[in-house]
Image (cartoon, rainbow, N blue to C red):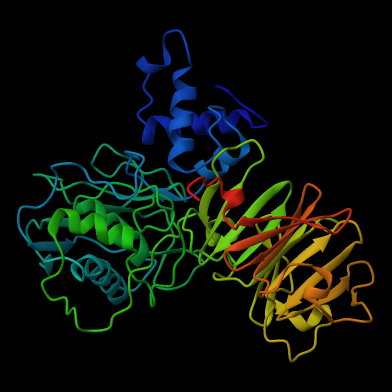
Length: 453
């Protein structure tokens, strides 16, 4: 097993993971040439947008440890289907065979019904519950070996699995009773979200590599009260069954959320920061993570990396001296050490010494030369002393008096390899740390490896 800074237990986990989700078999591990394990690792890394090394590195292990669906990962694509496996009718039945003791009966019933309605709202599919006999979609809770030759693995790991439309077990959805399922609380796994994902399989969808899609294989907390099926999933299910005949094109309904495209020439980034030698670019609920050795940044939901973080942030910066990263949204700031929220956060941004009249931070970066952290607010900026934990005297100052050539509002900022990068809308201004001179004006997707501009 190719390995880098991982344990024997990690190696065993990886081999089991690749067998379960990427069809690594005993036969494929024999022979000469490139190791089949390396090929399968590369396949898995490509699917999740990780750095493709073919070796078992720390990021790959971390992804393998995340709770997920038990259905294998298929083609590397946005939405994908199981091919010809779809229902040949639009009226389907479902039956709940048993209940989890984690929730009340009414909470389970409500979660299952709403999860099915996620798909009914955008297709001609309609679901009717039956209480006896065999339904198209049989729903049950079980643990370990539960009668389908695909045993569950105990707490965390695999949360549930479902079967593509076909005779017999096709369409059925099974949930691991060893998990802690909840109605709304994020302290366990929200049954509505897990079920909505599994019912996508029951209807014929495979996994998507779109990190914002419901059919992404890794579990992500989302508020069940405000959840809207993402565009990638809508496209996938409508490719099988078509749109809902009840759609009123004249009505103003919220559009399905779309995963941002790194190469969208009109995109304005929300924030940018470094973190332990990497670059993080934030947009909406997502970020791109750029590795120095990788040619393709990895896209992920913010909450996949920092579960307690907000989405649609305003600014971010790394404090190398404390090994923390700070995320700003509105009048609040969140501090993280690694993946964990630091105790006492979120705090008001006034804790940095900013006036309480400041409603939000537009951008922020730490200047490694001076040891100061600069906060951009409108056309002005403030200087914060990280050692004394106070704002410097003589501020705010005007942005355009310090950063020549910059006339628009600052939208993001960071320092990297001897340069300061100030974003304004779709453009990025590159300044020399040594002289302060403006070197270049670049498109804001420059570090996202886009070449279509």
